[in-house]
Every structure is written in C-alpha cells, then in structure tokens.
Length: 288
Picture 1 (cartoon, rainbow, N blue to C red):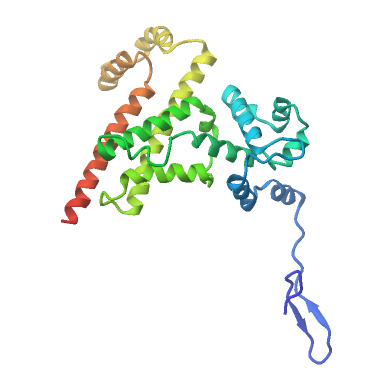
Picture 2: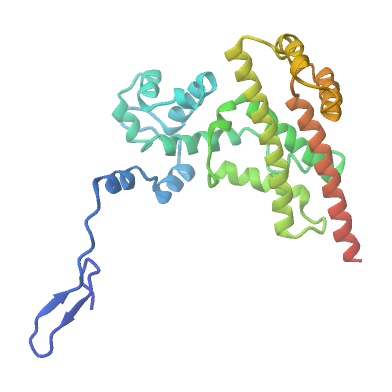
C-alpha cells in the first residue's frame, strides 16, 4: 500500500508493523534553486489565456504591464526589460508586479503573444489575398518580416518551444489556412509554413546583425568596403580564387556591401514558393 507521500509500505506478517521503502535522496541547493526558477506550464497557460484587463488591488492590469514591457524592449532590447525597470516605468513597487506576473519568463511569453495579436486583422486575412496560395504565403512572409522590424527583440528569444497563447494559436491557424485543400498532407502543410517562417526569421536576424555592426563600428558597408578592398587586393590572388573573386565583386557591387538581407529574403522566398508549387503539383497529379 502507499502512504500519503507515495512511499511504498509493507506490513510484516502477523505483526501489524509497517516498513517504509528507501528514502529519496535530498535535493541539493542548486536543484532547489533550478526548480524554483523553472516556469510552471499550467501557470503560464492560465496567464496567457486569462483576463488581462482585470485590475488588481493597485489598479494594475496584466495588459498594462505587458504593454510597458514591450515599450522597453522596443527601445532597448530584451535585456532592457527587468521587473525593477518595469516597476519604475509603471511607477509601482516591484512586488506589485509579481502579484500579476511571476517572472520574466512568463512576461516574455505574454509579450510574444501580444505582439502576434497585431499581425493580422483577422484569421482569414492571409487567405483573402488575391492570387491564391502563392500570394497568401508572400503576404505572410512580409507581415512576419515587418513584425521583426517593429519588434527586433523577438529575434533575441532562443527557444525550441512555442508560446501556446491565444494569439500565437490564431497566427498558426491563419497561416495554415491558405495551404489547406491543396492536396498537401497535414505534416507537409506544417513543414511548408515552418520553412517559410524560418527563412524570414533568418534573413531578419541577418539584417539585425548588420544594423548592430553599423552601430558598433560607425561605418556603413560601403565605407567598410572602400577601406577593406585595397587591403584585400594585396592578399587575395585572383588566379587562385577566380570564381570567388568574380562572384564576390559582382555581389558586392549589387549589394553595395558585404550582403543584402533584403535581397536574400526576396530571392529565397521565390525559390521556396517555386518548390512548394512543384510539391502541390505532384500531390494533385497523384490524386487524379
């Protein structure tokens, strides 16, 4: 039988005595600290799907906290958002925030879900784009690209798990609908969307890195190239690297810099759409 703590107990024959099983090893301080910091999935879901407009005793709401956090992140990145800075921004005590939001992990999830809520006017917005699924996917790519430009701190979040909030869920629904009924399997629909969004995120991150490099170096790409090209000519032998020299010069001239994330976005998007078109044609051919 089991006691209230789940420890296995056995009665000795005819004695009425009870013997507990082996005790669990005591947790170390480090383990207890990790467990204390670990986000609670049930609590996060309750926050994401709960009422954000209901004020607490201080009159503060989750919506107001999240909006202030997004303003801080837009201005200074995700590192600019701390519970202390947020309390100063809202002119409240830091402990008042914890009665609404347990910590930064939960706050970040709320921020992500909130900004995704501004992506589309409604769940059918991508599907309404004229030109069929291809223009719908192009619209989805552009909207996500614009979102990264408006909120570059989104690119600072590194996680393999999605935020399972209402707006993120609506985003997923909205972006899948243009692919529905084309003959693709459910897994292929998810894979196409993942490929598209991964490409957008990657090129948006490249642009963010280029902006950061400009800010830190104080040099534009053109200025950097003018300063670097004469030095490069002295160490790069065009006879040894004929293809790299030719292509590098052509690309540098076209981009007016080392690279062009905007060009990479457009070029990659068209190749992805071409490949998806072939996949759809194959699936439709197999069903006829």
